[in-house]
Image (cartoon, rainbow, N blue to C red):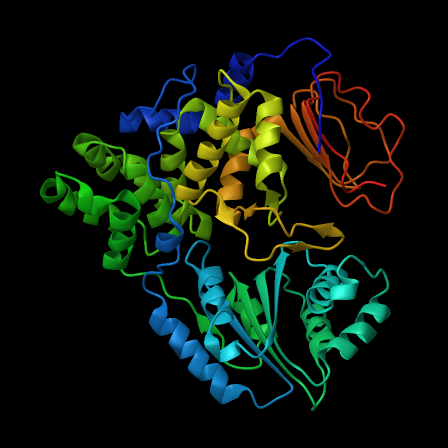
Length: 471
């Protein structure tokens, strides 16, 4: 990561925030409906730790133990073939990945070699194969095979005569032939046993890839959502429990059984007084979740609520994370360095600025806007001593919504023009960037291409530049 000094006209934080707010008129209006106040003034840059995350609390999973036990028992009965595939499906934010982690960490698979692969909306068999190879083979950890046949051959050697548990998290691919090719890549013959747990939002994908009955993840019960809210809001330490209890239960019912919604709401409610709990419960904002029949509408109202009461500096720190692609493993120290380089967090001394960055991280973790990464492995990169985060898909959607036209995201087929953009995520480094206002630039998946001599020469206000995936 290369922090860059600004060498062009200064774009003030006030101007940036003003432009961002123009893209958020709807959310701002909803914020006013709530009559909620921000935790602190944007100019003060002081952080109140609403509720810093605790590893012990985060490990306490509400409402999924019975389902975990059911899945483990079902797998135990069904592992008679060379490959067993059990999909877990359900709407976004329910806790599919959490349930998969519970299975993954079960003593039942203690003697198995274990692999965790984040698949994402971009289905790439080579990347999936390379990820499995790198996690099972120490000497091939930093090698990325480019030929599918080489990947298949090496996987056959690695998987043979072994018991392997593989989690394929967040599968979106719906093409049956592609899914069959994926399964073919994982078959090891009679001498080995491969158990694959898949998480996906869609029942039809689950049915296409399964070898045994898929598991549909049910929403949490309202009282389970209320338990999560109480934990995240530190409800038991409040003096006004009696008055808030029925309001809190009403709010829990609005979560619609989605764990992510309960988590973010609980953290937000921690710092709010009685009257603002009432405002959260009674606002017409919740009616937006009934306007469309999509999975994201069940969660976004709660996430927007949590976003709306953030102090301004935390809002822009969160929104900046939209510059990372979905599923990307964000290195904690790199993220804080980037925030500082962008001027998003400032304090009187260097040490206190870093501490402010650490506290921003903890607040975003508390809101479930950042999550600790399960897998610390990216091919060719050693993250052994780094703290890594990811963003839930729905949270990432919110960050992109917040950024609106502030961020330029282009592919190899797209262009690199973005006259109003201040942030860019580009998949092609072979042509020049045609924007002078870009302040943060990342190139992604450009290892096979030579960096253009003028790839970013027009970006005279550049402060953050990531060339780690360029040659």
